[in-house]
Image (cartoon, rainbow, N blue to C red; front, top):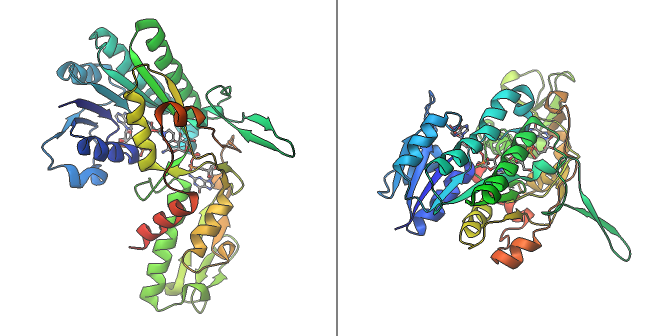
Length: 361
Ligand code: NAP
Ligand code: GDD
């Protein structure tokens, strides 16, 4: 039986990867950190599985990282998915983001060298956020298209992206300098029903689910609501703006014009595993190749529940603007398609509807 260690097992991707590895008959060692609330909700159905074991540790604590690896030096695969992964939060907590998202990766790599874990394969969760404001341009006969691939230069635009770039280059250095089998997946945004509630996609679908449930309890037709309150308050209401019991806060969002290449998280975790099955370690872009704005996401999400005028329910709040923004992401994953045989299985529309349906239930 192969053993895998997952740092970040309680996150969105950690839970999908655990599903996949247990299905493939792996023994999975998941690293969880001590916090004041239970963080295992995404893996709660797996906790009884005899092939899953949780170890307590924190990626910022080199001592705890080395102890965990020492106890599991026979691991065939080590996945580093742990991160402070919210870009906007990284502007408010840059040092913490650096310690977790940047230095945490170094703590694992150095422990692997110190323990001479040359037989273990390592995966680093790199990110399309590392491209920042940069893209390449493909010039066709009649049009031009912008994209990012493995050769596009990184111009990071956030403390999160800078920390991810450092971890990415460390991953490469420990491959070339120490002969470790280290691969990095440059993953574009990937979502699903398990996505954290403060990322834009889930924030939208969760709001829709909550609003529809609220309408049902109040006996209001969702499409009948009207905007009410002052410009600052902004509620939607069933019949009257005066009756507070019939008011529901609007969905507050920031930049609606950003383009993202959004895929389904389950598909992307399969790509992580595929990378570590290759004899040669390498870096791969994982994406869908399609890009959409936040507005397009809103349009499909709201119309999937019969609400065609999404702008009635949304208010733009500068609180959600970032000091620097990544305007455009669209990946080219030709290398992963060719070398790994990987392809995304879910379309953008499927993804949006899957998330809305899940939040309605
Ligand atoms: P996520 O849901 O935010 O999960 C992050 C995980 O890291 C959680 O398990 C979290 O544990 C853990 N963690 C945070 N700080 C830690 C620490 N100090 N020590 C140990 N564990 C710690 O992120 P995700 O969406 O699953 O993404 C997985 C990885 O891929 C992240 O590295 C992310 O930056 C990267 N990535 C994500 C995307 C995307 O679109 N989802 C795209 C590119 C790259 P708690 O549960 O205790 O908080
Ligand atoms: N979170 C959030 N909340 N984003 C908003 C909001 C809002 O209210 N309103 C608009 N946005 C915009 C952001 O400004 C950004 O342009 C876009 O929606 C996507 O934001 P997020 O969903 O927070 O994702 P992200 O692209 O910043 O980062 C995610 O993808 C990266 C890969 O490119 C995260 O998962 C990162 O960890 C990951 O590396």
